[in-house]
Length: 198
Image (tube, rainbow, N blue to C red; front, side, top):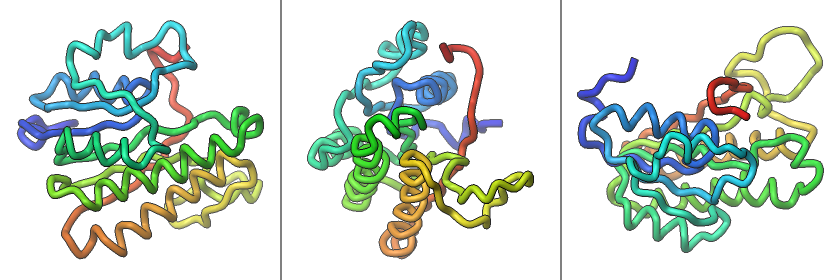
């Protein structure tokens, strides 16, 4: 359960806010006293689009741009001055990663580096949540559910890019954020289904 007193008047930046999970994150946080900013490309995958159906442009500060452009990442963080960064933006489809592996690695690896580097230079950020995937685990073809301390890996480009995002996040936390008391966690999301997923 989200506690409104924690979220009260926080500035939150959500990358990937136009996607399925990002739209739901915006919808949930919009019901609390949160100042929400989003940073994303236009959603080209889903028609109809949950972000548009929920009329989220009216509820948040909607910014468009590409994570692979480092200066754009710096600009959006400087302009929005978030207390909390929720990094959800990704090339999120395994099939697409086979079709265009370079785009997948650029978005999921370089994009994560760019947004964390911009966060590192920020004076406002207190906490960061990086959403990756349960595909980040090395698939040993066993039938047990993954545990957080299982080995990371990934044979396909998507899974590998998500394992990389985990390593990048840990490196930035240990090297930069920990010493400045800035929290950083990752969440390894599995396949999510629900309303608005067409």
